[in-house]
Image 1: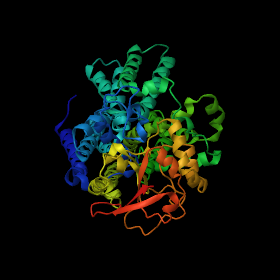
Image 2: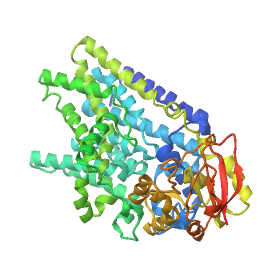
Image 3: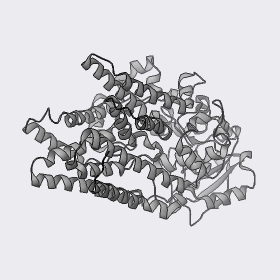
Length: 557
């Protein structure tokens, strides 16, 4: 692949922008602001717990001793052959986090760049638009623990399309071999590979023949994923005791609610695959579609039209997966509840940014002024994404240091004065991940795969609180991924900062069950007015300048 000096300069400029974007993570380290939801409140703590558990290579029937009395399956923390697991095992949390961000974004950039350059937007004329769209794609605020589950799709598609065209090169298989070690099949690639299967089948029907190389490549990548994610395969196919996923019910929305969700997802996106496409990419796509329609360019621009339609269909599928009309089927086929087929919409980041590149090309072809408009649209999208930097978006949230509050929890551990494995704790008003990150053994947790019997036992502790609040009752009973000490008063609020003046009133916990499960201490973010009625005694209040929380340490009696 010949690369001109101009193209090299553009690539280097794009990498410089990525470096500047990532700089706050490496400079601020623990003082950085990053995503809390499905990040600080879960995954980052999981990686630390796993690396200290002695269960990195634990057997498929192994457990994590530190969480829910050792009932949490080792398999709930995924494969030990994932690069991200090793990053967090080998480096301090924020060093690993920064490396993960850098690796993911660089691979995302080059993957989209190669895909567009060879298959969608080839030619010297489109270098600037290609690199601009690729850079924009790499700047999207992706879900960190997803790694290359979505942002690696363009690179995989580049390799598959090469093989589909008959290209014999080991680099294509090198890509298909590497990605399973830095991506998740359930968080993206199951849906991508099944889409590749549909593409292969469509080719077979149209051409009355079989592209065996293409079919083999799809099967090969699926096979590598199965080897890497052997724990997931075992958990899915080998029937064990009922787990929390068995009480997950997704088909609950009415028809019109599903319609509204379709358009919400189409225009606004989804938290796990944020694309920030609303303000610039959507208008650009509709403008390009107008030119295609007015100038009858359907045949010439069929790839753009296909991606435009596919983008909407993915949102439609996502929304209607939650339509209550699925209930008869989910009752008959249980796997439709335990596996989230709505995630076909995880294909959208690739689809949206590939179609954005093609839209810019169509707009550029309408004349000089339109060509300048296309360049401005690309530049504005990049600028907009830069403003979505974590340090800006989450500036009002606690820093990593404030969130995990290691100094404060070290003081609590010293005050208790016993080895953490000798007692169990639970939290009110803060995420259990904080206690887990600091080495405490917790009865509460955030995991979507743990024994159903434990969920039912834990429910007895909060049964009266659930009865008083239908929101948390449905949230716990019909999902239960957050096995928290929910209270009717706080509902789904579990980040109560130390400046709060609120008190917990009329709390009704079954502390008898709590003690039976080994519970000894409760870390509460708020004072409990009726602590004695709940057989709780306030031991001490802990505070720290470096903590976002004030912890009221209660002990059972």
